[in-house]
Every structure is written in C-alpha cells, then in structure tokens.
Image (spheres, helix red, strand yellow):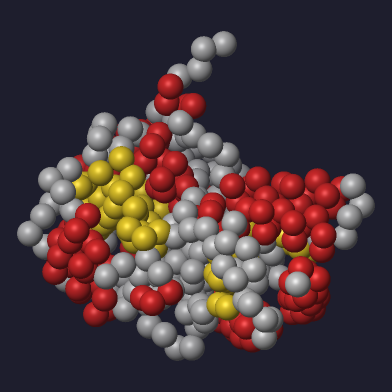
Length: 390
Ligand SMILES: Cc1ncc(COP(=O)(O)O)c(C=O)c1O
C-alpha cells in the first residue's frame, strides 16, 4: 500500500515505546518498577464519577454541540477568569478529546508549509511531531540547568525570523517541572510585542504546583498577550481524568474557534457527552479538596524522590516546581540516555524515560506519580545499578 507522505512523518512517541517495553518485560514475569507514567496514579474524584453515572442514567447519551455543552464551556470560562485571570467567554472556548487533541487541531488550523514554530528544548514529545505533520519547521531553543531549563529573551530574539509563526510554552514543564514567573513571561512578551507571533500556552500541569509558587498564565500578563495566546488546558492531570478524554483550547480569536469547530465537526464531533457533564465538577471548585490532596501527596513524593536521587553518587537533579517529574542529569554515568535506560531496565527492572525523547540527551525523566514505597525501592535499584558499574 502507498501511504501518504504526511502520515509517514509521524513516529511513535518514545515515551509510549519505553512504557510498552516495560509492560512486555512485566508480562514475561520480570519484576519491573515503572517510573515512566505520564498520568496521576490517583482515582478520579468520586463526585465526578457519580455525576457521570447520573448522566448515563438520565439518558444524557446523545450527540451534543460540537464544541461542548454550553454549561461546560461556561464552567471553563469561569475557571479561566477566576483562577487564571484569563478573560475568555464561553464562545471563545472549544472542548476536545484531551489537550493533545486540542493541540492537534490548533496546529492544524495555524501551520502552513514552512511556517516556523519555536519550541524550547527539552520539550513534550508531541509538539515537534505535530509541527512536522502539518508541514511546519521546528526551531528548537536549547535550554540548560543554568536557567532552570527556561528560555531567556536573548535566545528567543536570535531565533525569530519573518517566518516565525508560533512559540510553544509549557509551564509547568514536562519533562522538567519548571515554571515561568510573571517577570519571565513579561520579558518574553517584550521580545515579541512588535511581531505577529502567536503563543500556544500548554497549561495542563497548572494545578500541580508546589511550595506556594504562583502559576501565571501567559495570557494574563496584558491584553495584547491575551489576544495572541491560545490557552490549552484540560482535566487529565488536575483531577486524574486521563482516560475520560477532555481538553480545551481558548482564544480571543472567534474566527479561530469557528474554524476549529468546523474541523472537529468533520472529524470527531463532540467529545463524549458523559465526560462533559462530569467534568463540570472538576472545574467549579467542588473537587478542590481532592485536588489539594493530590498536590500534597505529589509534593511529599517529590521531596522524597529529589532527596534520594541527589544522594546517589554521580546523579544530580533540580527541584521541580510543578508537574510530577524529575529530570535527572546522568552525564557522569552515561551521556547516552537511551543506552542508560535500556541497560537499567534490563539489569534492575527500572523503567525511566530517556531525555533524548524530549530532545535532550544526558538526562532521564523520573515520574513520581507512584507511591512512596515504590519510589524508595526504585531509587535503591538505581543506586545499586550505578554502584555495580564502577
Ligand atoms: C505537556 C503536556 N501537554 C498535553 C498533554 C496531553 O494531555 P491530555 O491527556 O489532556 O491529552 C500531556 C500529557 O502527557 C502533556 O504532558
């Protein structure tokens, strides 16, 4: 069969490849501890599940508006106004099957051949794949530990050309957990204010923030930034709803929302009606106690994993401010992150994600979305693995 050139540009996500390798080893009876999860290990809050059951029993099982039921979009609009200082109306929001789907649709609506998309590295694996798929050009900005893996204005200035269309910002970041402060966002704004550059702001980890750090949405810093930012968020990470599939895009450009609606109406139509009803409880403050519980458990795990990893000779990691990942420097052990991960998985049954999957070799991503006992066991094995090498 002759496949389209477009589909052949897409590779399987390397994070998924490692998880499935770990699963295979497990099914062969090997004792594998996986730290590759990209999702909370908590159950979805009961209130959300109960509302889903109510929706099913009351027959709320038909097609809905393509962009989402009005009360859901209103709940998102209220959430964005109250929690993020983002003034989007309900008709400036479209709900899709996860933030990943929102990003797919937004990239599809914006990227023409050879448009340049600036992506800070390390990056979440999906962005460059989507840019390639839609014929755009990835322009990476390499960051390092010196700036907590965040881009600085000078780097951005150097990468901007007349073809620059979009800058992708992910805060808190997957894989580093770092967060852009209001001042850092203002400095980025100063670089782009005289251009037509669009910001795509992926805020999926926004609720998982530690040490009382304030999360700032890029679109909240001024009106011009709001107008040029497309805000992407969802409920996967904040209320442990990864399997329910809900994400959303918000933009002041009503025409863009209309075009996204057209695209979605010809592809997936509305997301599942039951998820829509139930998700309102994940947005309106009713599950705040559950979310606070998740954040506090994640913070304890982060502190534990951070301390244990930094105690291992030759390993070094920064304290993440948000999300649920440590990005560990392994350069002194083996700068080839894929080789390190394979060897560690085979010898000690510990699954990590190689930094190369996020565009940065010499690092591995350790997800602490698992219990404290597992963290202790896993880190012990990593320690043993490194000791046995020397
Ligand atoms: C940075 C980032 N954006 C978006 C997503 C996708 O989330 P969703 O489950 O809502 O599609 C993920 C999931 O891992 C992510 O890490």
